[in-house]
Image 1 (cartoon, one colour):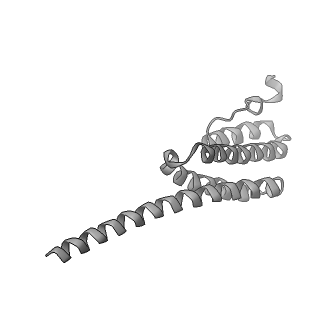
Image 2 (cartoon, rainbow, N blue to C red; image 1 turned 90 degrees about the vertical axis):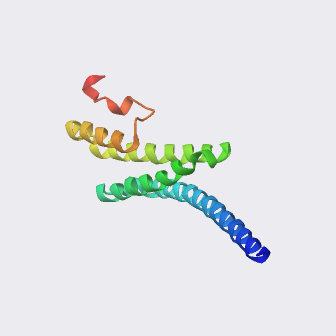
Image 3 (cartoon, rainbow, N blue to C red; image 1 turned 120 degrees about the vertical axis):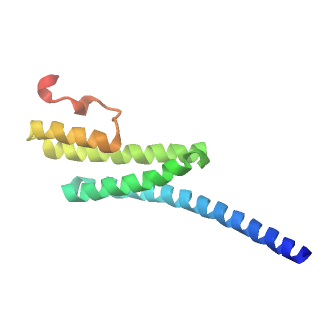
Length: 134
């Protein structure tokens, strides 16, 4: 009977440790993926097509869903890295799209609305106004 109780306790400890390590691994992987996505966008974003940007938006949302799940487990330094990577991706996407859409002001506003719904409100409102509104 004592052996069964010891075995059960041992299995319980192993399960808890495994879950803890999986969680840490998942959150570290998500941070790495976000930073890699930011680097990729920074290097190649100017040449992305609309379809490639859609892929980036999808990857961004998937990665951020994992990050949000573990957000309070990250240290302040890791949170700063998350904010920096998110900001880089948003800014590069916005700049790239605005450069491509300058010829189409009405379409530009529609894309801005979609962009804001995907990423949330941006920090710079200058892109939210058409040149005629300034």
